[in-house]
Every structure is written in structure tokens, then in C-alpha cells.
Image 1 (cartoon, rainbow, N blue to C red):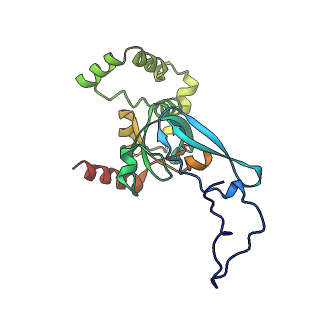
Image 2 (image 1 turned 90 degrees about the horizontal axis):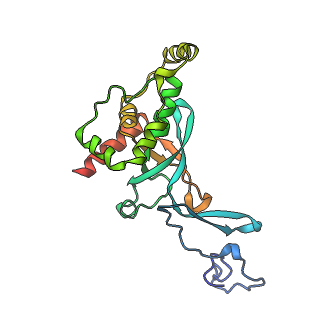
Length: 221
């Protein structure tokens, strides 16, 4: 069967040999690590103890990420792995593990924000020459993204009154608003892709966001 994680083949504390009276179990196998990478979804089922199954993700590129202060979650695309406290090697190889810091596509959150509060974060953003050139290169993809954008000016009077009520005591963190305008937001993975086959997490906010922004700035230098 190969390498197992069972203690049956180990000696006792006294030094005596253990009498093995049963066969090895598949659940005790010493399997290879998942090393989940960033890429097109590839997930394989793995039999576990009791006939249950785990899902081992080998490649993932999307996940459900929650915006805690707004109590919502969106399915977004993972763009890059930017930081890992364990090793820079995991960043270089774009390995997805629990608690790694990733950059995600902020478009779904920006669209939700416009629908919920009636605030278009791109309204006060001045397009640069580089951004215009990038939009031309994208071609059809940029046209599709523009079609998906929510137009706050077409809202009904009833919805506009609702927006006024919602904005009354609402304030968004400046760092998060800047990230939404850029189209990339920093998030932390909270799921274990090698066990659950999913890449879910939360958007960074407050002191945690400031901490990782400083770390990334320091890393660039």
C-alpha cells in the first residue's frame, strides 16, 4: 500500500515491537500535499475515513469572498498571490493556502456598492492614458465589462429615496474605496483548498489592511 501515517509499525515506549493484528487502511495513507496553484479549476475527490470524501483542489481561480463590514459575499476571480507569511516561495509559485494574501477582482463588489448605495466610485476617477491604452487592447472584454456596469442615473425615484436612507449613517473606508476604484482588492484566504476544494476568504479591512499594505510596500523596496 505504501507509506502510512499509522503507529502500528512503530515500537512501544518500552522498546518492544507492536503485534500487528489488522490490515492497513486507505485513510491512513501518507498522501502528497495538494500545493493548490492559481489556474483553471481542477479538483479531485479523495476517499477519507468512514467512506467520506474530501475535495482536493489542484488548481483554482475563483472563490467566494466576504466583505465583513457590509455583510455580503461575492464570487470573484483570484488575480494573484501577493503575500505569504510562511515563505516567499509560495508567492513565487502562486500557491493558494489558508491565510495567504491574494489580490481579487473588485468589479462585483463595486457593482454591488453602486446598486446598494447609488454611489458610482468611478465617477470622480480621471482616466489616464495608460488606462485608455489598456482598454483598447482588451477590445471585446472591455466592452463586456462596460455593459455589466450599473448606471446609477437610471434608478427609479423610489430607489433613489432608499439610497438616501441607506447613505445616512454609512461610511466606507478610504483604503477600500481606493481599491475598488482600481479594480483590485486585497483579501485573505480562510478556507483550506487541499481539504475542501474551495478558495474562499474575506476582504482585508481596518488595521489588518493597513498592516498588509505596509508589508507589501516594504517588500517592493
